[in-house]
Length: 62
Image (tube, rainbow, N blue to C red; front, side, top):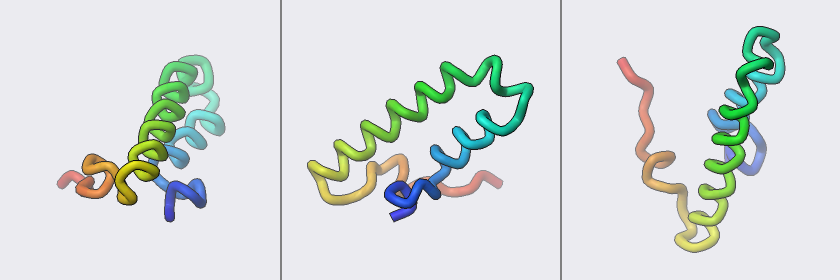
């Protein structure tokens, strides 16, 4: 649901690049990585009906 509502960590990280001036110059490659990851994630969901393991099993470090 978070991905569908643009509230997942990928969308949030992309928003940071868009809003923090020092990241805007170097953020193009990162934003492409994020777009590719979101496409991969949506394809995985369409095929398996669940989040990718790297999304489903992700935990905060610490």
